[in-house]
Structures are given as structure tokens and as C-alpha cells.
Length: 393
Image (cartoon, rainbow, N blue to C red; front, side, top):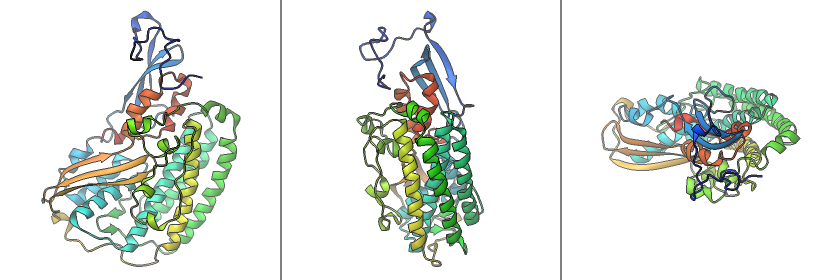
């Protein structure tokens, strides 16, 4: 088996001393093809420019498209509160981490302390966001390898979570529920009980997913050894989240740099060691069950009523003292962070968003897809879990 991501000099004598390949398209040996964006193995408006020798990938270049772009400069032209409908678009499947990081950064710069009850609700929101995102990913990973039934099951489960978001915020995708000073409102009456029933149904289906997906000989044969990420690459390429944990490196900001109400929750950082597509899928499945457990803990400890927002000045005339900060959180793909600079005016001076997709979809993907069979490109790409708007932010 080839070591994915390392060019094999014995097979390709035209390799250069630095390991690169001298690709001469005019020789007729190589062919250039595009995969995506209209492809089930491409996560969003992204395309891969692949150079093939037979059915083997010799070179991969990422083209992320032009959807949902330029957010950072747009935010500098809007008042602080007007940016909340905007930050959601940076990561459509899980906008709540953008809401949290942006709000927490502004609160730190403005010296605002949010109520305890609001901290619990924020933690609940982020774990619900993690749950629905993982459910969509599991279906996508299975679908990229021809197991369509798994996607039908997990998207049904995701819709159940989105219905709970709709009950909570009035919206299924862009919730805009986390705001400066706390959240928009307390939990609706009966919400906790309905959430618990939803979790029971999802948990049952997840064990069906385990039997049908992870015990399937075709899935195991195709994914074990595929898309290997060398643990030495983790620091070199800035790999975070499940991609790092599946390589045996226990990195989870919820544990390493606790925020919100995570210090009050009992959980361990999950890891795998094989660092291939199968290990990353297995880890995310386990993480999904962990999110269910955390939501149950949060619901048990969240007060029925209480202050849900700190008192703030008029949002349209809010000025924040000059300063800078970096706030980060653990999303489903790893470290999500906001670097915010203020100058004392009613507008941000500078905002930089750190999403995991840039390092994973560009530098990592372009390295690990070399020597991959073209039939396995989709499964490998989905396994590193990326969202293109984070790259074109």
C-alpha cells in the first residue's frame, strides 16, 4: 500500500530530488480533470484540479470558489451588532460558533460579564450545533463511498435537531441566538423534555449506523489505510479537531482552554490512533454520542428561568474601548477563533477569522491526495471535513 501523501520515486522515475514530479501534460501520460463543485464528494462550492496518471492522483490543487466571501472586510464597515446576521454565513452548517466567538470577543473588549444562565444556554446551543453538524457529516462520509441509506438516516436526525433550533430561535439554519451580553431569550416551556426525547431517537439510530456502516466489510476495506495523516503534520500544517485526535493527539479546546460552562461538564477527550478515513469516521461517530451526553448534562443543570442577557447600551450607538483579543472555541472541525481589534469607535477596526477549513482543505488536502486513487478522492476529502466559505472569508 502506498504511503498517501508521499510521492513514490520507484514508480515515477521522473521525480525530482525534492520529491516533486515533473509533469509534462504534452507527453500524453498525464491528464488533468476537475472534481466538483457539482459532486457528492465535494463539501460545498469547491473544486479540485487533479492531475492523473491512469487512475492515480499525481497532483491536486484546491479551488474554493467565490461563495460567501469577503466577510472580514464587510464587518469593518458595519456596527458591532449589525455583524451578527453576517458572521453566520462564514460557516453555514454550524453558524453558532461564529456567533459565540464574535460575541465573546466583544464582551471581553467591552468588559461585559454575562449571566450564569446565559452561559448554560450558550453551551447548549454550541453542543446542539455540533450534534447536527456531525450528523450531516456522517451521512456525507457514507454517501461518498456509496452508502446512501446512512445519509437518509442521519439527515432525518439532523432535521430533528433543526426543529429544536426552530422552536428555540424561530430559525432552522441561521439562528442569531447568541448576542452580546448573553442570548436572546430563555428556553421555551417544555423545551428540555422535548430535547431529551429527540436525543433518545437519535441515539437509537446512531447505533444502527454503527452496525450498518462501521461493521460493513466494504466500508472497512475502502477506508482503512486511506487518507493517512502523519501525526508529524499536525503542528506543521495547523491540523486541529478530529483530524488531529484521530492521529492520537488529544487536542480539544473544551478541555485544553475551557470556556462557557464546559468546566462544569464531565467528559474526556476522545482519540483514535490509525489516522485514516476509518479512524476519523469512527472518532466523529463517538464524538456525536459524546455531544448527546453533554446536552443531557447541560439540560440537567440549566435553570428554568433567570437572567439571560446583561444590560447593554443602545446597540446602534455602542462604542467599545480600543483593544485587541483572540477568542477560540472547539467546533466540529477543530479550532475556531476570532481575532478582533477595536479603536474606540462604533465599528470594528479589524477582524480575522480562524476557521479549520483553510489548513485542512488547501495545504493538507493537496498533500494527502497525492498517490490516492481517483475513486477514493471523494471519501478522503469528506473525511477531513471542510467548509469553503471559511477559506474565502
